[in-house]
Image (cartoon, rainbow, N blue to C red):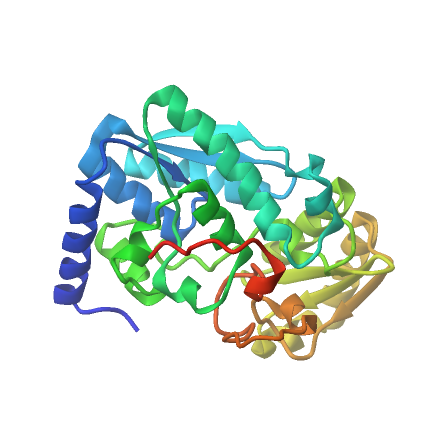
Length: 304
């Protein structure tokens, strides 16, 4: 549900007040709605003292990189692409349920170095208030690195962020969440460049067929599990479409091709995780980053 104009104006005022406390900032910029709002306000308030940085690695789909470039251009913020090396971290490659902690640690290490070089000593991310419902490893990495989350600090929900993005005129205001390609690989299956490339090719093809909301999950034995909205399943199972999908996905490297009859749901790989503490569950967020109990990772404060 979109916020009213008055609510959006109040949210913008709160954010501007927060940004006025920064002398400069580096924005962890994926090109998604959340980080785009952060980058937009950073540019409006801080001008050239704001820098958006996008991490490029095999886990970032090419279309997501292109979106980040286009959004940064629309905003007008200084923008830099950097190469990150999470695949050189054994804990990341092992793909345990703490994978995102190691990925974000790699990112924030790189952003920390840039912030010191540029004398922009505040690092910002796009976490919003809804993300705090789960104990997320990416948030723990952010807390460890001293990263600020202005959307969360201002109390903005995901819906409020989208309303603000629309108000700011950002063309991606209604863009679906699109976590990194590694989030498609079942826990315990190693993250490899070949698997990431196969997933990217498969999803790109399905999108070209008119399925904009899609996940291709990798499971053991080179099995693909396709998730699309349940009301689109009948379209994919049409003979001509089904045969084309089989051909392309086999060519991409998948041995078995399956279609999930439950339909699309973000974070479905989290359904196999066993929790010993309360979480809000895998369906409460539009991100594929796993929720973890605090006992599994270092005890660090969550910025809010």
